[in-house]
Image (tube, rainbow, N blue to C red; front, top):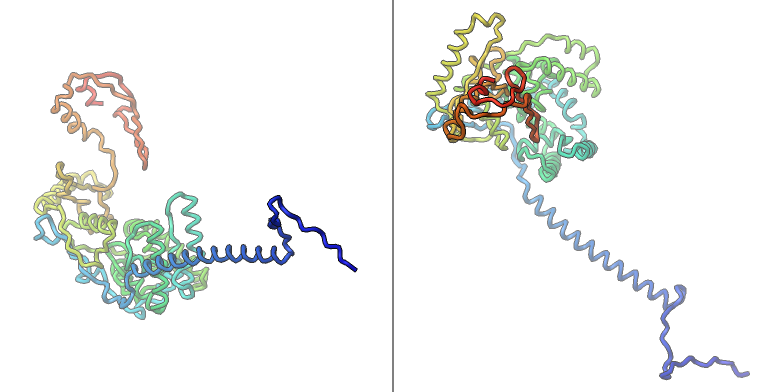
Length: 452
């Protein structure tokens, strides 16, 4: 029986039309789908390969840029920083391993409670983390995002060591990434005890004391091996803010910080609540560091500037020639002392103090800086030349004199005296300027405005 075969479809030109659409389940449709998928997959793989190669190259370049962490030794930290006057001949300070400002010791020569206090307040997971704390970094990142700027870094003890030893104090994401990478390398290269020893010998505890041994000798006149719980908790709280929590300068703030450390030790199960209570009740006797520096307030000022610029005075070997005129500095010290002596009758409670600073007006060079009459006295480390104070009318002879000298006005030129207060705002603060009587006086001749 003959089969009925349908007639083939022909185009006008006599050719069979090409199929434009194939069902997905048809062999041709399945082949086209596989081809499309393979092409897409190949494109994704190619992009990932390019990204991977670029990331690998960047990572290699990044790690190659990191400093070597090999050969770290606490004994090698010491290095003199020499600070001289403007001639380079008078040595104002020799900061470093020639004095008691840094005394490197082995971990076995540090009181165990000092180590526990440091771990409790700085990095509770120190003995188990890989050099960094991911949860701490994430928390710090959220805090930074909320504040709009970098306010904290969630740094572990190992990260702090990496920052102190290898990096600048810049608050940048790049520096933070390097800090974490170096901390991980340190954790893989050195034991936890080695890292702890390096950290305790590296940290700054205020009062020109680098390392816990120098701090123990300075504040308590005992070696680090003899620190008791109360003393250890006090010192462990200092590295994060050595000036603000300095027990000699700010005993109340230091006491609060000591309590924070003791509470952290209880939470870490290092001590009991009873031990906390006994340590908190212990009355500590602090010893203000004696200082053999010449112009010690100025030296402190220079050291702070060096740290702000990323240097490590007392650690790095530096020769720093300053603007100070040593002969004039001695004259300035005599002026401050004699001024205090003349006014002792007013100083019934021993609270009177003064300071003096002389600046070269054409260059801004500090020629003389006397922060207080006696640096080694109680509160003598306070630098009164850097404390913001209302200058009152003391600037009038300079400002009015400059105007008259420039022939911009005469003593009879009318000026507007007001408003009072005059409010000045900048990016950092708001300042109010008042007339002596707190009132505005309208238009006055310049000679009368000087008296307001």
